[in-house]
Image (cartoon, rainbow, N blue to C red; front, side, top):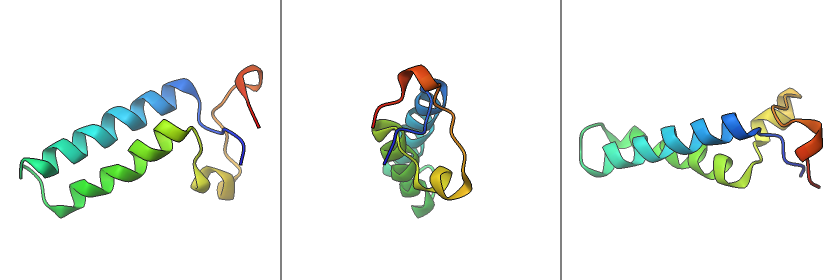
Length: 66
């Protein structure tokens, strides 16, 4: 699967995912905060299966790897 998540998108996913997990860990938000693992992992991997299904791509052509 090709990288389909650009650098800004990746950064935001990592920040939001980590924040949700941290808030869930300290009990500020409920169990759903653990769903932050999804944006965190997709941000770290640079690949989003949902983007692939929808035909979206936020990664510029010059930085794509296969």
